[in-house]
Amino acid sequence: MHWNTKPSIVQGRSRYRGCEGGFTLIELLIVIVILSIAAAIVVPMASSAASMQLRSAANMVAADLEYAKSLALGTGQRHSVVFDAANERYWIVGGTQYAVTDAIGHPVKKGFPYVVDFANDPRLGQVEVVDTDFNGSGNSIVSFDSLGSPYQGGTTPAPLNSEGVITLQAGGISRTVSVEPVTGFVSISD
Image 1 (cartoon, rainbow, N blue to C red):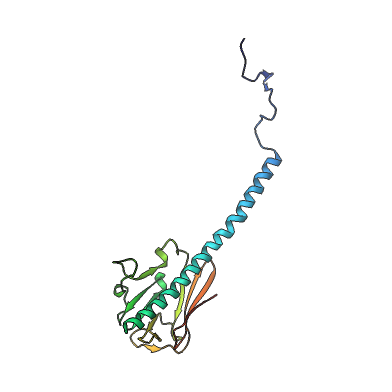
Image 2: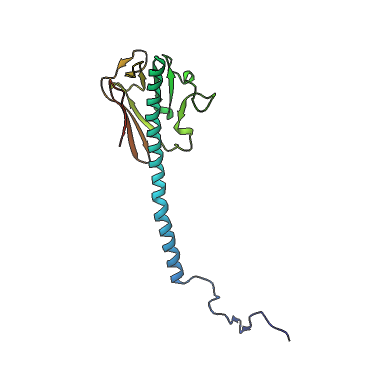
């Protein structure tokens, strides 16, 4: 006995129904609903990535300002944070030399200078340094003396007489890191 496993063709048509090409309206609607649900989940995640990068960058800047202040307190020498908004980076220096080549050594990454480069860091690539202003002069250097008091850095250091600010932006959202005059208290605001 021979079993025929192939479908029989009757007058050029398969005996199975629904084998003709194309999709039904219900199948298309189901696919559209699934895609719209996936898009509704992915779009907020993409925008929150910029928000998370911005939050991380603001926390990093605040921590590095505190680090420079604690170095100044601990060593009794001036330490500064130099911001380069045009290149989306900043670095920490000791003394009165402010070039990126004068950056202090990184305490964790031994053998590397303490330079934070947002543009070349894939974790913070969306973050931009929009503005820095210490003493209302557009100065991009903040220094801390041996008592932890903040100064406008540069060739003519002057005590901060107003709040120093660093403005960061990512995905249309901005955050401000502030340094208070006299105390050097560092805070982050939206």
